[in-house]
Amino acid sequence: MLTRFWRELFADPNGSPALIRRLLVEHGSSHWRRYLISFALMAVGAGCTAGMAFIVGPGIDEAYTERRFAGVALVGVTMIVLFTIKGLSTYGQAVTLARVGNEIIADNQRRMFDKLLGQDAGFYADRHSSEFAARITFGAGSAAQVLSLVINALGRDLLSLIGLVAVMVWKAPFMAILAFMVMPPAVLTVRKLMKRVRAITLTQFGGGADILKTMQETIQGFKIIKAFNLETVVREQVYESIAAVERASNKLARVANRSTPLMEALGGFAIAGVFIYGGYRVLVLNLPPGELFSFITAFLLAYEPAKRIARLNIDLHNALTGVQVLFDILDIPDREPARPRPDIKITRGGIEFDQVSFAYRPGNPVLRQLSFVAKPGEVTAFVGPSGGGKSTIFNLVLALYAPNSGTIRLDGQDYGAVSEESIRRHIAFVGQDVFLFHGTIRHNIGLGRPGASEAEIIAAARAAHADEFISQFAAGYDTMVGEHGAQLSGGQRQRIAIARALIRDAPIILLDEPTAALDTESERFVQDAMGELIKGRTTLVIAHRLHTVTQADMIHVVEKGVIVESGRHTELLARSGRYAHFYRMRFSRDSAESMNEFSIVPG
Image 1 (cartoon, rainbow, N blue to C red):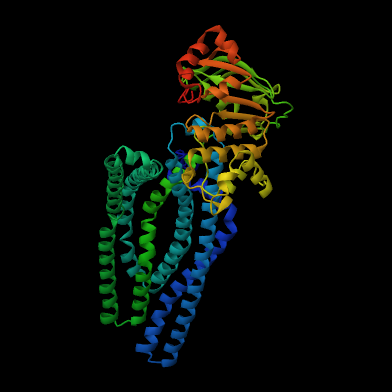
Image 2 (tube, helix red, strand yellow; image 1 turned 90 degrees about the vertical axis):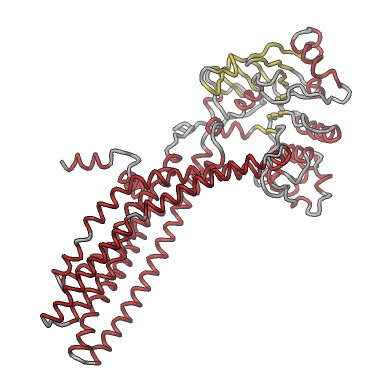
């Protein structure tokens, strides 16, 4: 029977008992020594609280019955000692719990961040970044909050209540029975509110995530909002999310505090009953007043911890919503294999796709049994209409995704048999949409190879033709680039990105051609920098400009996930096939300046 009860109690993995047990196993067990210290300090504080209630009675009797000043003075000194010890123990347990809680928050934030870093690119495809920011903030803190609630309830509140109830029973058993009569109605009321609190808290979290999402998009897309006069649209979105959170918060306030009037009324009845019966004992039965004062003191001191324990389920359900959010992330299966794979060994840098097929969504293939070889030290270009699969090829080369079928080889080594991290260690990537991290120019270049020296950073910047504009800034390499590099022009951002790729000194270069959206002058600087970057390296290019296409050692025309034509520029023009058609349609309009785009959006 008992086994069945425990099995049913923990049957729901998202139920309160299961979540609390998991928290205690994963976090409580590793901090048990400090929790034990905190619990012991709480026991000292609880003992002092009960002791203060207990000695009030003798103090009253000494003053008003025995009329001995020495006895009153002794009680007063004892009170000072008890209050001092309680204060020190309260300070000690609060600091200890806070340090444990902060450590748990930091640990969970690290675990969540590591879990998110371990996912592939597809995991983020249909999710907004603000969702994870909300989860890592809300979820990590909730774990520490639940454990603190449990420890405080068991230590501070329950031990204090036990000590004070012992004083009440010792001094006046019948009055204690009167006081305990308020407990059953209070417990029943709280039980009815728990499920509603959990649901409302989830609504709060969702609304808060929506606010964060819209705020983030407003900041990042500020120019677009202004250019298209979208202020009214985004304002309505934010206002609606704020209103939803406000409604949920108001509802939570109503539900969570619904038990308060009943508990206060019941407490009033209990106190009135104690006073009436206590007065009868003193005035009619002529018993010493000390017992009555000790009992009333203990009862009043017990009222607050009793209320907190009665509300514990409501507060726990509120916090456990965040714990569920935390475990939703931590329980995501790791994409990395259970057994570590060896690092890849690069000798020349040749890349081979052998009958590779891939789909982002089942039933909607992007690549269909695609095969090609990128020879070491040569430039291989991919051209074709938008959506043909060019950028997907780059995603697979970077091991951001694994092919559904077929094999990718690097220097003859199967991608599936080696570490993905070691593959990316030998690749440098430069795209059209350069992403710069918040920080200085030096920081962004140095990220290409963490630990690079100042001289190496400057050398990479010079090779990328970036040093000339960097030196014109007052702060030089310490110039802040702003969010996403907003303080720099497009051409400057591209050259910083090329310097970042140069300092990596990787044998394989991927270029989603960085000149596609640049003016003629900026393009010239970036083309010169790209020339330095690809020297002697295996280079794969998604080609948008005439210059890159004509200089490539091999051009592949990609349409609907397959290569329909391959060859050098002059060979493909001579065939008058798909490449020649695209060339005449896209490139020949302004071949002198190479200004026309071949594919605006990579496939």
